Length: 195
Image (cartoon, rainbow, N blue to C red; front, top):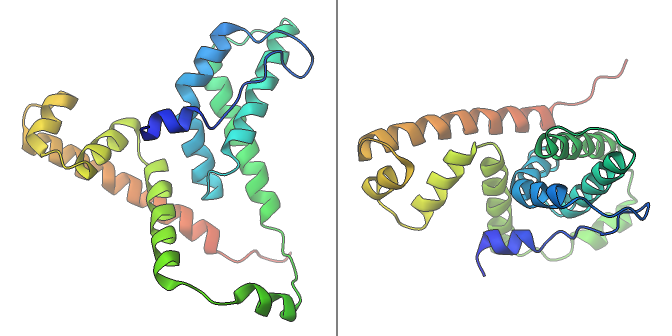
């Protein structure tokens, strides 16, 4: 099973919705189209995608209820992404609250650490956050490079004139993504000011 198919199976659209209304088929199709973007949006704010299915399912349910109450949703994909982003931001802010932990609890939690496994997991999370900072074409080009495709083949697939053009455009996309990634981590590491 590839990553895209695996990603599609990670969320479930409740039909009927929470108020018992049948979910519009166009909304279901829109949800399937934007799931990966919604997952990356959650990654951008929470640096983890474990809450993405829950957030996304709630956004689809909310859109279904809005449509059932005769509200017009002209662009369901944009509505879903905006709803997911709002909820991810809300959860990010909620998670910023300080939690005090007893020192005995900290020692128990620390326990033995497997550095290599931790490093691999950290690297994988960083790559996911970096991918969340890329646009769709950048992600596709990145995935093709990871799979071992050369720039000439990528240029043909992506519609660039030659291998050099594809590589230059990819580097520009990576530079933009890295700037977003650095800004994201700077914003997370700034201490809160007390007023």
